[in-house]
Length: 122
Image 1 (cartoon, rainbow, N blue to C red):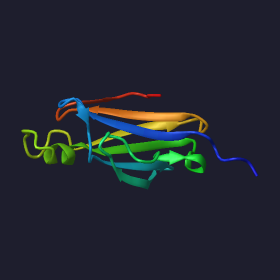
Image 2: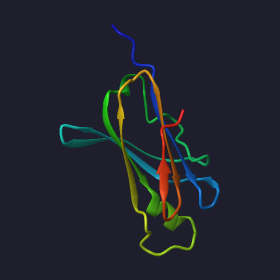
Image 3: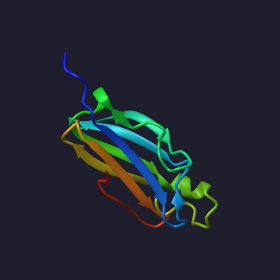
Image 4: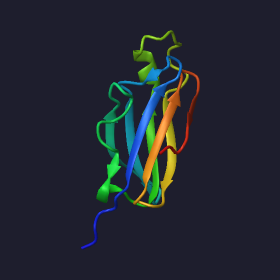
């Protein structure tokens, strides 16, 4: 029996308009395979803008195409910031590949009500 992969997938969301973590922001993780999407996890960020557990770890880590979707519009409308309704940004999807399940994949999101950016973190 082979050991499970040692990698993991994590995220962190920062509300850069207010200069603090985006607490209470909904996140969905889906695997994209053969034209189909399978949602594998839904969660909400904690007070630090992170999740309490990795999105994927161990045997869950798999080579392939994945999508993280961040519920930015819902978060910003609930945050008390002055916005238009509906919010300019609604769902923020980020598609990425995992090519080595032994590595740590960190996909942070820096978001304001009008823009966002991401990168592969460490």
